[in-house]
Image (cartoon, rainbow, N blue to C red):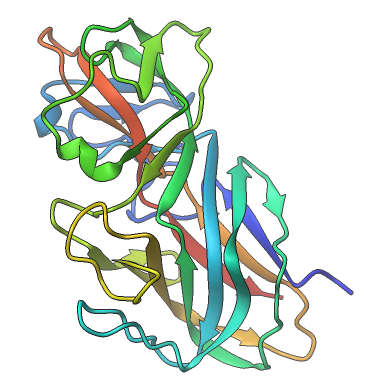
Length: 295
């Protein structure tokens, strides 16, 4: 019997943005990325457009994945989500750690075949932590915040932080999360906890993605409610509405979930003081999305 589900890491397939490049989304005001993935920044950091790119590795933990015949109700601060119209495809109470590298395919355990039918929605319950390993080259001189090493490369270190830390005006110097220097640097794994989507924002979407829209909410496992403060979430609840429904038939044998992470990393940085030079304090997470098909 063919395996029923596998997760595929795809660097070029999916995007939160309509004009994403294969290597990422560093193509906007003050940012560009060439065919070799080398990034150039120009001007002040606060005036730049978005610049997100593919990490070398991306680690997530999945608890549940399901297909739905009608739209799940998203959580609020007083009511948990309602997924009564959904059938589980994966249930993993302790979570399954998935380390995705470019071009890899990983088969998950604990899989249940959904009943034959048409499913216009899907949902994913996962940890709100992301392990990121990345090394990126720049034409600019990049400084490890604030008094650390400099060079044309920056890479993640073995460290952990909340993404809300990027709002802080007080950082260790040099940063414990990233290092910049020459080509010989070796990347470690930076574990980032996504505890807000923007300052004080704990829900996102719906956002256009391949084959539909994606919405996401930061919740706690204890009560399934939308959080109201940073550093309090421990789960991410995501719902995808499919433009083309997923059809499961008697002949269906393969359910593929593709993770588009060509924009799953971004630079946390500030102006250094010299023109077109920057202080980098982390390489953090950026947007990702999912795409489900059945064969």
